[in-house]
Length: 577
Ligand SMILES: Cc1cc2nc3c(=O)[nH]c(=O)nc-3n(C[C@H](O)[C@H](O)[C@H](O)COP(=O)(O)OP(=O)(O)OC[C@H]3O[C@@H](n4cnc5c(N)ncnc54)[C@H](O)[C@@H]3O)c2cc1C
Image (cartoon, rainbow, N blue to C red):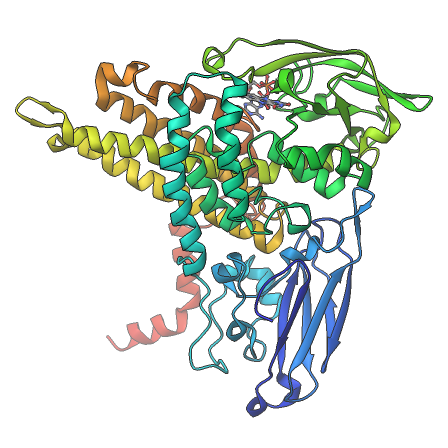
């Protein structure tokens, strides 16, 4: 089997020439993502699991009994959110060193056939920190060595991307300039959504059992990039925020009843939803542990009290998912909160207003960022999403993918602004020549191209790591691209506005709207500063302070040490003078 599916299952053929005992392969198990737990069956060989310490993944080592093929079958046994998430966990299980190839969902048999003995010991994997860092094994059974890095796209998937590119430009971009109401927009957008469904490109962020395609994050990245070029792209493809994140956590943690009641209509495009976490000061914002909204049990209901704001789309949502404190006295501050589904007509739910902001005047169809009061708001106990106290766990599941999906869409927005920048630079003349011939403008073009390329690679790498090891393991990479991508988006649009002069400042071009929206990107889903802190903390874990008074690279100290190290040779050299 050469395709990564939701169950991890493959076979490999040992190399007879090496001797049976030396045939083994190693597989990263994404333990820790949901608490680990696997049922493993190996035919034609034996296996052992080396538990990873300090957040490192477990390593499954499979050893062939002979020269025949070995079958490996791994199924997750753990529960997530109190609900069996079935086979979803092992979508992340990946043989070591499949590289970017596996991220696209395909696992070439060649890359898992008979790795050289000891070439990929768990120890080495841990020291390198990531399979990416290890050089390929010297000896391979196959003539060609497996490719660890691969920037190409499979031809059949590229065809889908090409179709999307054309479709978004020709069918979705025109929607941006039609002046219509929600009913009119719905009439226009429904046939487009149907076409997307027929093509199998609807709600691709979800696993197949929930109507998605089970594409990994890398493929999603390439698709979101195209969708993100238009604010309506995600709506047409069934993965607009905040509905996409909400559907993900409903799919992962929802009960069957909740899926029927909330997830199904959300996926069918009949429902809208909101995610209600942020509170005005002194409540939770950048620091979610400052949560003040509470829910207490009363009979067979939750009674919610609190004040939220910037709950995007709350005014038009059919339901909200609220993050609330249910166990304020828990010693573990990350176990105090839960998620509760609040229907729009729940008694005590007061949807006060959309908060005026930098983009609100231009928000279509009642969308916006709302202020919400929960005033003894009552919902059935069954509306708890996942287990009690699992609010932070679920938030983490939602926010990791949610953030990277934003970053993917920003690539498309930045690209669109960049295209406008370049076209106008060629078209507009000043001081005897096209703007494109001025060195400052050339600098903007070169800087933008380089920054966009960096952002794209960082986004796809973070997506790849999520595919390999899960969102928790990719925390540093996600935070890194969240603040970096937001800045690139902002800077590219800013330069495009500048090149267009007064035209760029005007509302006759989409740039000014894109610019205002881009400003929010530096704040929502965690402000830049918080993501920088996350990155710095993760990076610093890889360092220890040097012993003694001087830095490790202090030249006089190193010279002294080097002289001691080579004393014999230096003495011999001097003696020969
Ligand atoms: C367009 C938009 C849409 C949003 N949609 C939603 C939504 O749907 N649901 C929802 O729940 N929330 C939403 N939010 C809210 C968003 O998640 C919060 O704004 C964000 O988490 C920051 O919280 P805050 O605004 O309370 O800022 P605060 O927590 O008050 O922080 C203010 C500033 O303090 C600084 N700061 C904070 N921590 C640190 C630190 N550790 N180091 C250095 N500086 C720091 C940062 O500069 C930060 O911007 C949205 C926000 C925007 C702008």
